[in-house]
Length: 153
Image (cartoon, rainbow, N blue to C red):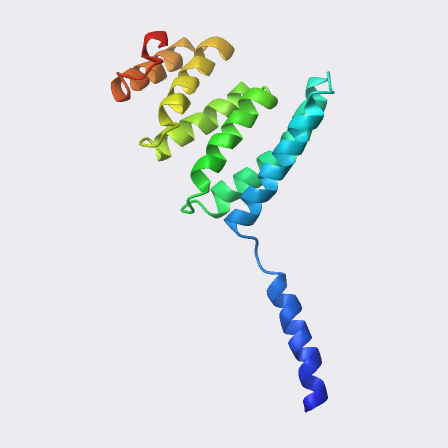
């Protein structure tokens, strides 16, 4: 029986190491990928090549959001995903979806006013959906009337 215990123990250790990644694993991986993409993006001029650089980071941030929605890292991961979609990938349709999701789920966080404002801004300036822009700017002013960006809404 003794010779059988060592292989069984080794197999158990291997299987334990193959467990599902944690929110922290995904978030840390996304942070590293984002930093590497940011450094490389400065040398590129083609927009689609730049967008591809940020896909791995975006995917890992979204894994945190989708697989660990109650983890404390889900909140910054969602905001970072929205920011990547907006700033690096230049995808206003998906960025506005993420900013709205953030504003709805985390209305009392530090970034909530910015997410709410940016939803209105993207609707207005990028998507030319003026009714939606007005609704999100109104929501911003109602929730955060003293915010420094209130005059811009």
